[in-house]
Image (cartoon, rainbow, N blue to C red; front, side):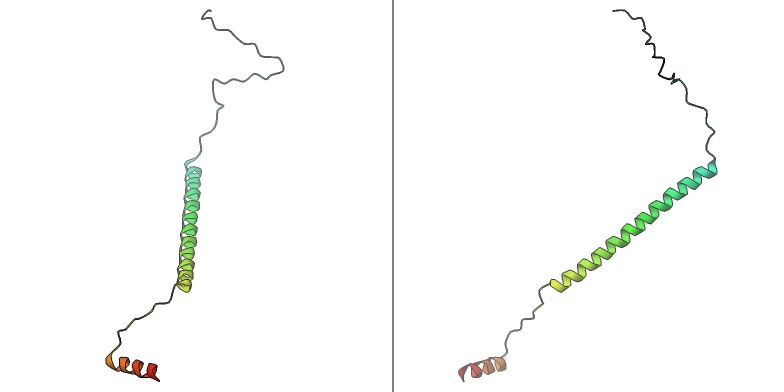
Length: 93
């Protein structure tokens, strides 16, 4: 084994690519960068508002449905003497 670098000749049909340097491009203007950033932030804001409103609507619907299906509340009172007497009389007849 040797440390010599071996060059791999490319086939004549394969195009030669220079991977050493990126092609020259003009830098993006700050106005376009700010516009792009503003659009991304606006889209994020819209998604946040939509998500919050849909979650609030779902929670309201769930609360209403839970209230509809809930067992009715019952008030229990202890009988007084008059009620005991009426209950006794009505059972006796």
